[in-house]
Structure formats: C-alpha cells, structure tokens
Length: 125
Length: 145
Image (cartoon, rainbow over all chains, first blue to last red; front, side, top):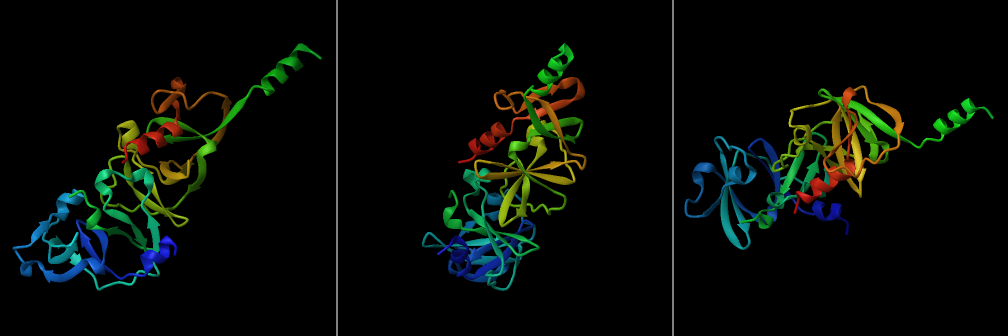
C-alpha cells in the first residue's frame, strides 16, 4: 500500500490554530468541546507554544489521546470531519525537517489550502 | 594558419560554464544550470508552522511540497522576487525567489563548489556573485535532524 493510500484511509478533524489549517487523525480525537467546557483537570498541550505563534481567543477545545493519555488542547476553529481522499498528500520536505517540526507528518493539499497533518505522538514532549 | 586564427581557436576552446544570472536586491546572482529544474512564473506560497528561519514556506509543484528559501538567511536582507527558480540536488528540491529578467550567460569555467561560504566572487565590481548551490543544500540539510 502506498503512502497516499495510507493517508487516505482515515478521516481527519481539520481545525485552525494561529492562522494555520491543521489536521489530526480522528482516531486520536476523543471529544470536541467549546473552550469553556474543557475539563480543567486534564493535562494541557499549549499549541501556541509548540507552533511559536499566538492563539488569540481559542473558541474550541479538543480532548486527544496521546501516548495512551488524555490531553486537552485549545484551538481557534474546528471544521466538520473531513474525508481527505481527494486531497493530494505531500510528504514533509526532508530539507526542512528539524527536531521541533517532527510532529508535522506532511500536508494535505486541496487546491486552496495546505493543511498540515499533526501527530502529537511525535512531538518532543 | 595565422596567429589570429590560432588565437580565435584558443578562445573558442576555453572551457565555459553556462550560468543562470538574475538580480535579487542589489546583487546579481549566478547559478549553475546543472541544478536548475524550472522557472515558475506563478506559484502560491503557503506558510506552514515551524518552517524554520531559512524558509518562507512551501509551494506545490508536481505532487511535491517544495521549500522556498528566505533570502534573509543568505543575505541578511528581506528580499523577494516574482518568479521562482526550482533547484534540485540529490533528490531534494528548493525554490528561490528571483526577478523576471533571469537570463543564461556563458562564463569562463570556474569552481563554484569549493568556496568556504555560500558565495563565489565572479565580478565583484559588477556585483556578480555565484551561489554555491551544493553548499547551500548541504547547509540546509545539516541544520536539520
């Protein structure tokens, strides 16, 4: 099975954080909530800090399963669950690969947007 | 055979190198055609998170995400051009923003890969510098993991 097929067989939640369109595998998402409804007891992932960009007024919270633990992350906008089979899968360029961007697996290009596929399991911490 | 004819033959046989020459800011840049893939007149630049200071973002080209170099990394200045020059080295691609007046020139053969830095002085009085593309790719890869 090719890399393109592997990426296409799953559904993704597309969301926006700091102005960037991002996607995450549905299998890694437990809940989508408003920011106000987030469980304050969960361990938080600071996406603004990870992406080095401000996240003004995040409206939504995601509960994610990361390395078998439930963590929450605030994001600006959430889109309906997407089947990205028609988008072109683009591998992350090796020339740009750095330690801090390992969590970006590659991109879905739908003709208008470059949606970065994020995998928090690959993040440094 | 006259001396003039011999001189002409000698000139004709002088090894030459073909370079793409373009301007970026106040600098004229020459690049060996060996690395050149294509010049794109229109390509949308996409900003991506954690791209690194060496890059402005990526473009879509032929089912690939191709990084676009930020000239500030090489020149210390914020520079941009309307067209994109696609380069390839060891199966990696890189795009450089260039102006619209790029042209091919022939110059006497010189080593463009042995320089210590990224730039080789070709005719400093004319502001012409050759970019050591091999070193640029190596440096960008070395900065990685």
